[in-house]
Amino acid sequence: MAEFKAPTEQEFELITRKTARRMKHQLLAVTARYDPRSRNVMITLNTGAIVGFPLAFLPGLEQATPDDLRKIEIEGGGYGLHVPHLDADIYIPSLLADHLGSSLMKRAINRATASKANGRLGGRPKKPLAA
Image (cartoon, rainbow, N blue to C red; front, side):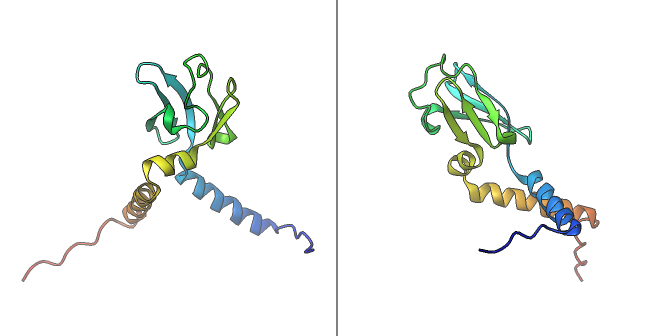
């Protein structure tokens, strides 16, 4: 078996920076609550967006009652939801990818990142004038 090699201080700093960059683009839950009027679990993401999912979309919550959903906890730094009354756990990245379309979201994030980088460089290059 291979021996564990601790990263150097420079390697550790590089990994830390890469992780911080990746975390800026990861959609994570900040709050979650059940809305009895719409019968959706409403999740506020770290981007400020609020998404609602019907119980049928949430594994383990299909037959949940409003009393069961009175308390929904955020776990793992926003990566998961936990419903203590039902002992149900929901992984946020999979939920979003499965029901909101991972390729569309990834494309939007990539576009926004490229746009920000282009803006820092002075924006889109000027088109040449027509002759």
